[in-house]
Image (cartoon, rainbow, N blue to C red; front, side, top):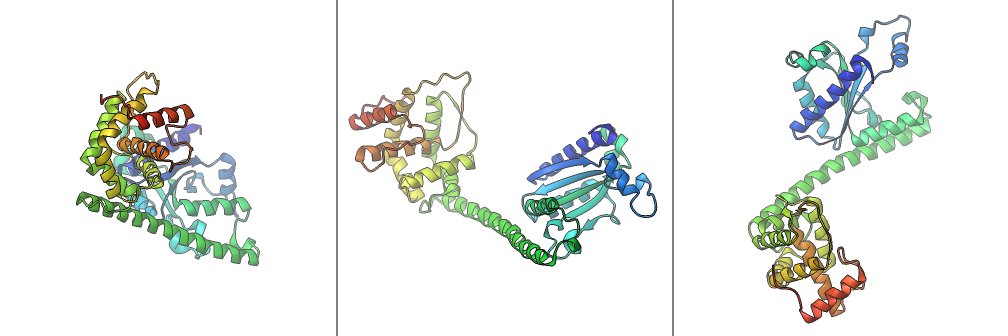
Length: 349
């Protein structure tokens, strides 16, 4: 995008992204666009009279796509706080449109930089330029994009029978939008509950990503083994657990027969010495020259603990001769089997 509006659009996109990030609002996208000359010309000559260029408030547009429906209002509060809003030309289409127009239930602002922002050197040249900000959820955006691709610009242009299908689909998507908000809130409540239960030292809770995440932080023994593994790998332990990584370990542990945090905690305590020797042996079988020290994830204990449990099950004949992450090679599995049978692990390092 060339010209002053192109430069302003890039600056505005960065500014809005940074403002929302500072408020802790996660977004799907923030995208700016400048209306083409042909599009602007068509809009200026539409109707009986030619309009002045200054009458176009959407020469520059910003589209903000949120993940959840209720985040639209959170974004709106930041926009109203940080920009000068043209109240006359702004519209909340969520209240103005019929229910079957789901995809257009977005919030539209016409705005410009406020006086405080214009006073800054980097924004002074953009004073007085109006732009449009459109805010909608990702499901509302998906509807609008698909409907636009179908080529019907107005409701009246759509055949009546198809209009009924649009209406039914709009209802389903609106329910889905609400359900995603409900699921997010319920997951947040579950995370808080798991943290509170683990924090009280109560281990009798089902293993899932949230309970294992809390246990990773609460268990002193897991912390010690994590540090031992990081040292054996000549690595640096991460400062905090990663939920995605912990979720992967939770899935594997459940598949290996661990039913609760209590089961897992007992196994960690019982097998702590063996696990350390097992890790040292496992790492001795790997040649992995590194240029720099690796960052070792918190909770890596569960990765090797799962591997140890798998090796024990393999030896007992209760595990399939399939692969476990990290021991895919058949010769490596044989080496582990032999070590488990003889107990010939190197001493702790």
